[in-house]
Amino acid sequence: MILSLLPLLLQAAIPSIDGLPVGGLSPQTLPKKGCAAYLFSTGQTRTLAAVATMEPASLRIALDNAVVDLPRVEASGTQPLNIPSQLRYAAGEISATLDLTVEQRPNLNAGAAVPRAALRVDRTGKDTIVMPLAGLIGCAA
Image (cartoon, rainbow, N blue to C red; front, side):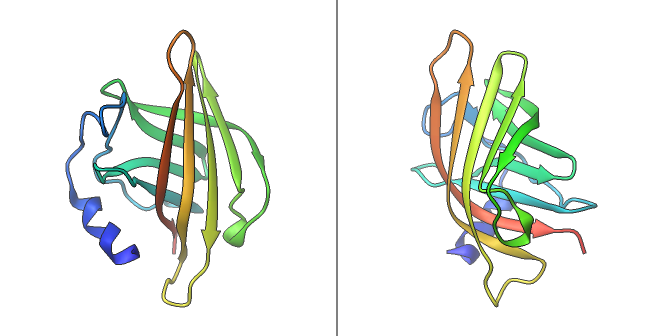
């Protein structure tokens, strides 16, 4: 599964994932400090959908054809690599909740797998979006 997701990092941004107002992100770099979760859509369209960095604590998504960086406002639960199991982000009229499961595997150095994740995006006056995701955690060397 992990190897099948790696080619997705090389794809260009996609304006809409499966008809949702969430689009795909262009390739992202590893963080200079700490770790980041690189999360891919798991529906018909498979692309990089979200990047959650731990330092600085933020979530990057493409929403309505614009890249949005939301600061983290809350975190709970502890998993491998000190990654919280639930992360909340908010800015202006947008809030997002990311629930993820982190699994360390012997074949992954400086990172871990995210076999399951869910992203919920709430926007004032608009429909709530919920997306299943999966991906990898990458950490600075």
